[in-house]
Length: 272
Image 1 (cartoon, rainbow, N blue to C red):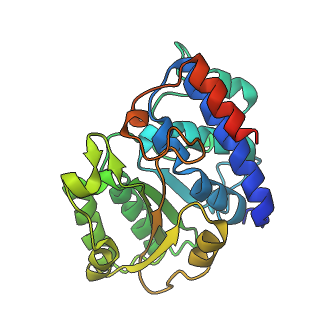
Image 2 (cartoon, one colour):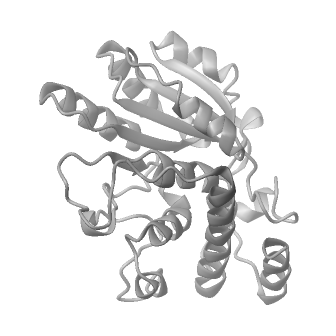
């Protein structure tokens, strides 16, 4: 189990993670800063308060498995893995460059804490469900944790995985939905309305909770209230671009990298 970090410590880590994301995206002119910012708190909560993982023993067969199904938010995962000790400063400097170690979607690298290659949306939960069933069959106690985007729920394969996991009562599987309500081409409610989202998951046999995805106390409470009988989902109400005022709730920041002026303005906000 990761060390039980306090809310205050997690807030401090989250701020450092956002600054790291900003640096990675600005330096490489990469997309998806808004999508990465909305995932920060859940990633910090998992890696510093939940997951049984260690950079000193990354191949431990009893480790928990985490899958970033929304692989386009990889800069957030890389920043958190660096904070947790799985990645070095040199690793981060080799993000999104020719011959680098870290691609713009995660590529499986167990030694650096990356369990699955992701990026083609709709696959992560199916992979996680297969891992969870295998663990049940083998009588292993490790957990499988999967982070999905809300736009990803447009994929039919996600709902097939929901049925599969519900049928097999995979209580060792925990899904998180980053419900920032903006996807690639607009607001989710205008493209394919997901509501009532928690009721839909429950109808597939899941234990569903909702939480403020930027409030550590609510996230911790949800993690401490998981079912031991059913697969679990925590629907996280988040803000795309969270942490930088001019990026928040703006579709533009699904794609754009900040220019030098925007970088400086964003850094000022994150340093307050």
